[in-house]
Image (cartoon, rainbow over all chains, first blue to last red; front, side, top):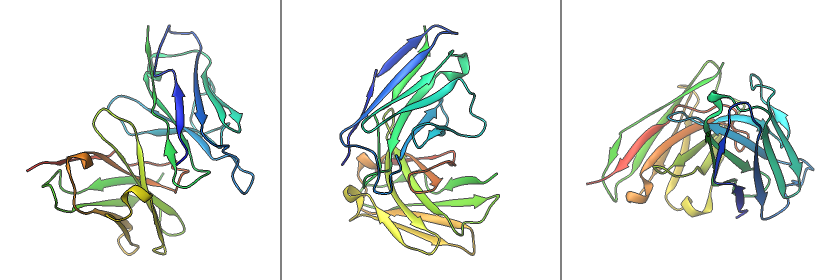
Length: 112
Length: 115
């Protein structure tokens, strides 16, 4: 299975400051069709996961533009330009390029 | 906006079969893939398997021998059965649309395996 490694595990951030989460895969996530199936999910406390970014860099409808995704191959990043209180959550990356789909272990973002 | 709702027993005895149903509203189950994902208490997410509306399935290898996903298009529902459960199967079970795209999720249902 493709191993997805996220860092850091925990990220305390000051309100209004940027945050960056790294996700590394054990294999390149460029699929056989040339598409990179790397997605980012946000899970707020007590809620189900919500997709923020799909195919590495495409923001889902309704997601604030302070969230952005980048990366290629085996290294990907989720950035929050200015953290707000509602961004307190665990963030997961997930790959769908190789069978079976696998999630990263999660990064917990909270307010410093 | 499509909505998904999981339902089923919250308590299952060890060695028995865990059965859950996901009801889709606000859209048709047809022409889409549908998945199950689970989350042990305090831990991360595990993708379990998917079904196409036509009935074709694919399961993660670690669960393949115990997992069955089925679909009932007349009821706009799909279901999960996980046999021979142990306490390691305790967690929140989510249904979602898609295989690995997963743009829509249910709210999740907690299943506890205990005698």
